[in-house]
Length: 556
RNA sequence: GCGCGUGUAGCUCAGCUGGAUAGAGCGUUGGCUUGCGGAGCCAAAGGUCGCAGGUUCGAAUCCUACCACGCGUACCA
Image 1 (cartoon, rainbow, N blue to C red):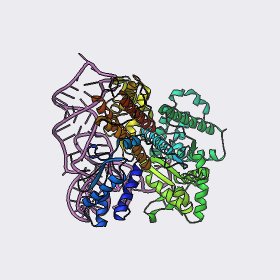
Image 2: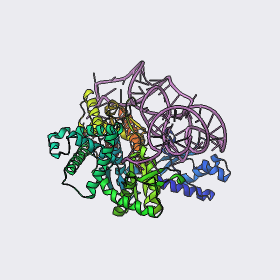
Image 3: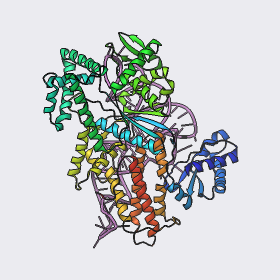
Image 4: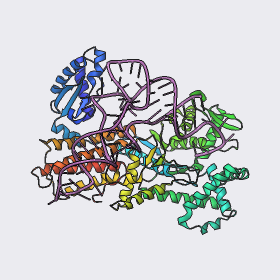
């Protein structure tokens, strides 16, 4: 509907002034109309004419050419043209589905990326939910999606944790792992990670041992060792980490990952590639390490292979992305991480661009901020006071119990997901459990309630098929808001910004409540028409929430 | 120091590809109320859009400088 109108208005402008105009319809305040365009203001400069004169002429033309869709077209202010749709056109707009601009494309999306041997903190929860929402948007827009979860099962953090695990076990005694109850394992491993990290920073002897342990883990992978005592400890506790992740994803009801990609698998190809490209001059040696010098491009120097000969995250990232490219030949590869990783990713991409430009240009890095608790308290994974992902969920449940209603798990999840989703991706977000679970205000539970209430109206009467014509003002306002759905989703998809959907759904619910306050549905002489509006509203809410991975039950 | 990001109402945030009177929620104040799920609706108070310039018919939005905070700045990820 919108693109069609834009094209017709551009054609009208061309007819009148013989210029190519880029017409973009916006949604003005309702008092002004359904759509507005500032094309006359845009053209005023190049045509050397008064914008209002242009607008007047264009308005006459629009009334002629678009008579079947536009009921009124008026000039306002300095030269805006405000359009009001006919009831039929508004009905069509409300029925329009979001576009499928990514049809037949393949998107690889990498997100969540928890590291085995490290606790899942609140940031992982955020990145997991954001990734789930973005991948849903992309999928909804027609793309084939491949969800990838990449995690560091090798590297210094593993050395830290493994060192402490061996200490805790009093030596390489894998059998002693059986003594640790299943429920205590995540906490136990988290404690080991903290212990190893502290030792690394404060104890020189321990630091040397940890570096050796790290190397030992790489060797274990190279030799495919599953037998030695050290290897048994490693594989067992790595699995504990994966079990712990699976438990979280299960609780969150996010879409399953298509592939779990451990760093150990990316390392060999990364190492090999960096060495090959070292010979071709893409990388260079420096102090015994292999680096990419991004300074000429305004970036940093980053180490890809350290002086121990081990690949750093950068080299593994090279291996990972080459593998993605070889396996999927995607149209776009989206990587979602916290924004602290932005600059080193730029270096990685800059280096890849030197030997695989077709891959580099398809990579897109989306970064988000940190999760903080109310009061702006920061959380650090290096210290003991980590707020974990599961603790965030527990905080939401706790806030729910304290409230008058006793929300179910669906509502708890809606609360957390919506609280994260409604912020624009990029900046830090502050999570407030009470606010997220509240049934009033801009919250997930509020929208679930709004949906359930609409369904309960629909359950009271059957709606016969009626044309939505001769709409009364409140009815029309609701239909107008519903008609914004497809455009909103299109925008959220184009920008990969799910929060637009949140903003819209909340406005939609408010519009409905205003309608509902003053208009009887069941039992009214306009019952059929209004039931259809209510159904359309409820369906729109449900569709929008689903795009965010939030359920919309008929009853709460 | 350099790079990236953020700065909008008491709090939490939208708005940022330039447009009409800068919008929501929470909180505060006042009103509606035996309701088709009132978990709502109506209204009020609350803003130098970090500061200063610039571009433009028009700037929260673009540009420059500055201030504050965050992240990054070679062998962590």
